Length: 362
Image (tube, rainbow, N blue to C red):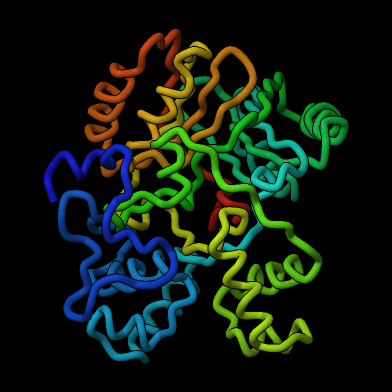
């Protein structure tokens, strides 16, 4: 792999050999999770075998232990023990959730909660405990707690921001922006892969995602079971749903092949060798917005990107091996954005909640 490929996804076209999330690629032999410029390097106390296991499960979270063992060249029991250890201590988890933005359900907001000195930690813990919050973090800069939250509608959002968050002790100001378009999520951050996800490919090419499938009550029950145990066998899923195994398998395939269900391996970037996380807001004129999105989507370091209301139209997050890598990323990428009117960057200092998971020890 060339150095260019290590820093950017190629443009356009149909990348050859991309199998997406349907199953593992590659054959047996030694684990291949941490070598090369683009792959993760040591982090979170994981060794090469751990990374090899996570590489397979990143591509297919429901891969059987036997299949994982074949790819990494280890015994099936060893794979099971390694994964159990990583999940037991909270370094790794599995996420299964329907994405309401892709189903046009409710409203999502990015909220900056300004705190009085000495109250940031207390406020962040309280916000992380709210069911409506997806992520809660504190970054360099002002004494703000950054929150992503989802509400059923605008009235519910106003109540949550003003009546609930606004009345917390230690909160001195609040700024909110609505998410107008969800472009990339953590599911599109692929530290183990050279090819973009289908969602990222659409963002790179500037094309619309396919219309989402209709999700019915049976689908939602299925997702709830997966939320409890993302690796639950198809046989057990069918039994819990009181349907045939063929029906359960077909429903699961339909959801996993669409972008409305995120079924993925979850790990903090630091665990995978990317301890530096950046948050940035960019002011981009409307006429330059689509080119900016396409350019940013090419960057593998980008793990979240949304278009928001307000004076700065793009909000993104990126993950890096060290601060030097982030500085090089920012200097190279932001300099190429046409018409950029403002740039605000910050490095995350502590994450209290991520993808709905409250951080261990937060």
